[in-house]
Image (cartoon, rainbow, N blue to C red):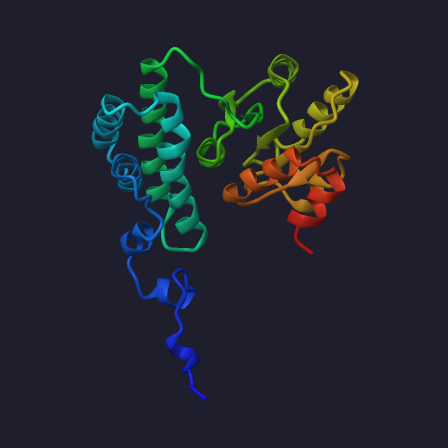
Length: 254
């Protein structure tokens, strides 16, 4: 009987093997075979905005549909970046640079087509009134966009009325709020009350340096999150009809 050494069996995406490879080497394992698409994906991964636009134009010149390239190439490239970030092979600056290249590419494709790109769903994001610290919101916005969501970014220091108006107007699947300072996070309660007054019970994802899980769970629609990379996963579960209890069970810390 032929004896097989278990250590010699290395599957393509073996975690041990990946740790011995550079991020570029790992990323190449995920690049598509189609050369035109591959060039765009690689440019997004590298965060090269000029090369992204040049590769997009070349693909369109060769007959590729501009809107389809958003999903097949731009989102695919950003998906690889997100995966490597989740695996600890890339860092936030890498993600932000690639996200900017992807965003520029999406706008380029939109201008080149008479059709509109279909997003998974809308999410409204904001930083609470009185708080101008928006780096956390910017990061979660990047992750949401790179996972196919349209983000209605209200910015920082956003009045409660503006938040409620945006939710009523855009009808998002969920709302994300960020607060860095303890003195500002209590506006979450007013927002929750105003949502209920308008018959809106969408998940309200709350995070930021001042926010704790115990604080968020006081609100019946509150879901705590302290990792921007998790927000798209929460949104995916909301699309799959997860309840607030489901979200808390899956994403809250024990």
